[in-house]
Length: 151
Image 1 (cartoon, rainbow, N blue to C red):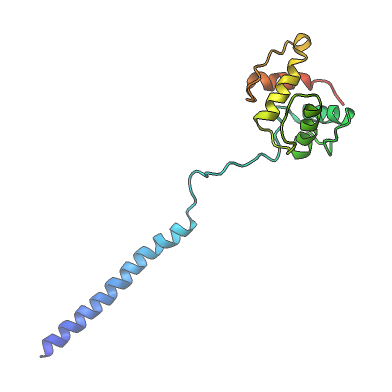
Image 2: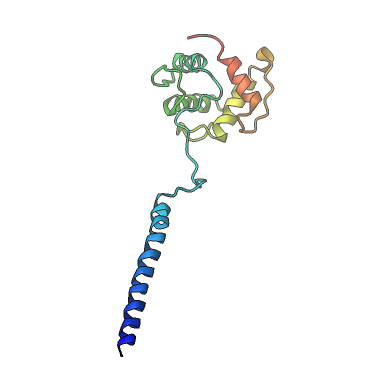
């Protein structure tokens, strides 16, 4: 009868050690899984500042240009944020270029409106932009040229 007690004790101790070891082995992965971050986020974030390729000086020129036409872009700081783009959207909408909702977000409607407006100066600055709502190289170049003069 004695060997049976020892066998049960040995099996019990082995089971406890095995469970403890297994728990410790998986503990590291469970903690790691909590800290893991997805490689790709599925959400789209709106840029706080979108200068469309303008440097600070030229962005200030755009802000001054809007201000001088009665559309307050907020602080003239060379950072085209929500207030600057709301001013631009109000200006473009008032001129019939259909920038859409005045929300300060530089989306396709705002880009199309800007492209329509810049095309008005095509003969002067040689802009002939496709009105496609994409701020591609031609649109960025035209916007850069348009904002070449100072405040």
